Length: 325
Image (cartoon, rainbow, N blue to C red; front, top):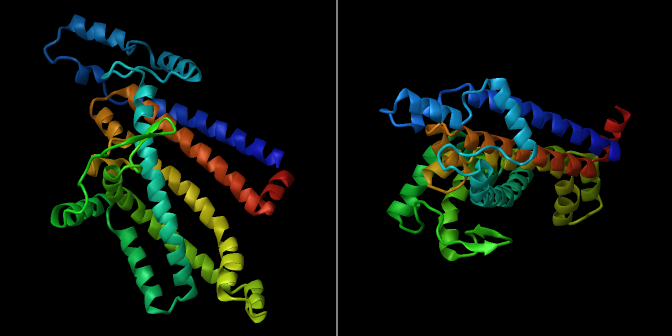
């Protein structure tokens, strides 16, 4: 197990280093922030002074060296727009994005796995076919269109839920969260559903496919022949064996929810990292963009590492094959 963890940790560190190079090169080769930040009527001397103040007059390799050195000390640069540490600005928005992603994941798993198992156990029933038809819609409809449709129905026509914003928040574990107040929860519900629909459809289809496969295995047939209750067969024999691929997908999808909640946060004016990223791209605020991307990479790599560990605990053959390799 130790060998497996060390190897996975080394791979994670290499992935972070490679992404740091790609992120820096991709962001710092595009555009000139001075053209956006400075007054169009500024003199050449003012433009030069601003360029020097932001450190953009140095060669790219030197800027990258400064970036890496500062990053190792927890400094990802100072925002060109806000004049504050970029990481501090990102971390202020992180709780909102994490709350939205976690609630969306809970909805995806809490609804997707039971519906997938039901569709897998009754593939030819009307309910099973309806569930699979609904999952196709979840895959097919664009995320932004789903969001506008939810706003139109539940906020405009029915007036049940607010159309945007975060609502009232309360402190929880040192962070401001929305789900502890009714106003905040009502603001959270629509964007969480919108973010969860695609992932829910994916989990439904994956769970159904694995349920169908597991139900054909000899140990399930033997359990039925012994006369075990259907509920016990599903909970003990079916659910446990379909969770290995499902856990992997859930871990990966949590990372993608955090990284790609941009559309949902923009449609619902949710004050998370994604909306901040869009504003920073419009203003070419490079330190904030880089800080967002690096923090996202770190979160995704960490989640994947935890998923690998959980995967190895569920299936000991994984870590044994790694040790032999």
